[in-house]
Structure formats: structure tokens, C-alpha cells
Image (tube, rainbow, N blue to C red; front, side, top):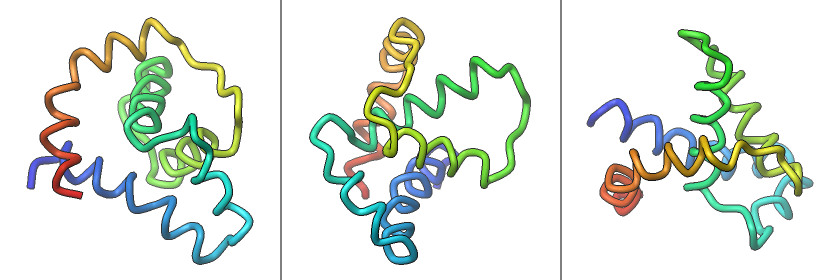
Length: 98
């Protein structure tokens, strides 16, 4: 499994696991304007913006939670669009395995 595949799978599974320990988080996953693809793009955008070379798992997970918690996450639309274009084929290919 490629690293990006593992990253996508891990991030996609995390919110569902969080619901098991925090039932109040469940409604956040049902928000119609939220989805795992945009969550991953949001995380990638935040990582790119920070210019840091490494993150602890919990930092990445907290970005995912933040994405789902907040209705108006401040997103850098241009950066996300750029990341989306670069990763579109990768996401489509790898997300179908989830």
C-alpha cells in the first residue's frame, strides 16, 4: 500500500472511530457540505501552509476534527483548488478502495 493510500485510509477511518468514543461528534459527519475528500484537502492545505516537515498523528487528527466541527472553516480556496487538481486522480483511484 502506498503512503498516500495509507494516509487517506487512516484519515477516512478516524472520524468514524471518533464517533464510538464521542457520540456528540456523529452529527458533524452528517453535515451535507462536509466530505472526506475535502477533509483531506483541508489537512493537506493546512500542512502546506505551516511549512513544517512533520506532524504528530494527533495534530493531523485534530485538523480532521476541526474540519468537521466548524461549519465555516477558513479555507484557502486557491490552495485547495491547486491541491485538488494535483491529487484528483490519486484521490479517485485510492478512495474507491475504502
